[in-house]
Image (tube, rainbow, N blue to C red):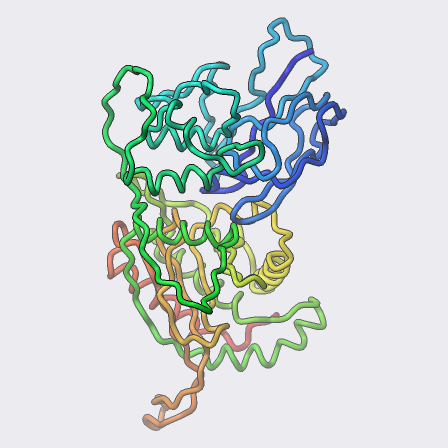
Length: 441
C-alpha cells in the first residue's frame, strides 16, 4: 500500500491560495480517482477538488475554514499500489499553464524544503498545529518558531489563523518579542520589497455601521492595490460616434432573441472592435516578466461582470479573434449569466490578455479603470448618450443628434507609451464608427 499526498491544485492565474469550505468525504472513506472529495473557495470562484488517485482517504490535513497555499498537501490517500518505501511522497507537483507554455515545478524530495536563500522557520516546538500558510507567513516575516508559539490563536483548539498572524504583525513593531529565538545560522539575502502594513486611524462615531469585508472584497482590494503598485497607470480618452451601431442593434435585437434565445447587447460589438485593434497593434497584447516583454499569441478578452453582491468578477473569452459577432454575443451572455450564478470554472477566469469594463451600464460616461495583472491594458466603455454634433454632408456641415460614447484606455506606462496607448483606443473608435450597417446576424 502506498501513501500519496493530495495537493491543493492551481485554480487559475495569480491564485496563490484557497480556503477549504467543506470535505465531502471523511477519513476512512473509499474514494475513486477524479471523484470530488472537498469544496474550496478562492477570491474568484468556489469549486470542487477531485482526487488524483483511487484508494482510501487516510488523513485530512486541512480542516474546514483553513487557508492553504497552492501546491501544499491537504490530505493523504492510501492507494493499492505497491510501495517499498512507506514515506509519503507527492503524487504530482502543480503545473502552471500559461497560454500554450507549460512550466513544470521542480519536484522536491519529501522532508526537504525549497531553498530561496532565506532563513527557514524551524519545526513546531509544541503540539499546536500550524497551517502551511501561517508557517509561510512566519518564514517570510522572519518570525522564529519560539516567537510564533507566543502568538494567540482564535482558531479551533487555539490554532493560529491567517488573521491572527497578520494582526500580530501589525502590532509587532510596537512591542519587543519576549521569546528569545534559538540560535540559527544567519543567511544574508537581498531584502524583498516591503509591503506597507501601516494602518490608517479611522474615527468611528456613534451610529456608524461597521461592515466586515467578505472574502472576495478583501481579495479585490488587495489586487487593486497591487496593480497600482506594480503598473504606472496612464489613461487616454476618445469619444466615438456609435449612431450606426445603435440603429443596427435596434433593428436586429428581436430577430436575435427569437433565434438565439438571448439579448443582443452592445458588448460583443465592442469586443469585436477591440480584437481588430489588437491585431493592428499586437504590442498592446503583452505581459511583463521582469525585464522581458511577453507578446501573447492568443487574444483572450476579459470582461468585468458586476455580481449581485456588488463585487466584480472577470470571466475570459478565450481566442476571441476566432469568433464571429453571433459567437461573441452568445459567449458574452453565457459567461455573464453563469458569473452571476457563481457557476464559472477556474479555467474561465484565467488567461486573459486584455480586459474591457462597461462602466456605462451604471450610467457613467467615462472612467479610469485599473489594469488586471499581469495584463498591461484595460478599456472602459462609457454610457451611450445622445448629443448635438456637427455632421459633415455633401452639401456642407449641419447639426444633428448623434449617439456618442467615451472610451477610456488605461495602460501600463512601463511598456506602453502614450502614442501606442492612444492609437489603440483611437483605432477601436474607428472600427466602431465604420461599423457595417448591412452586417448580418
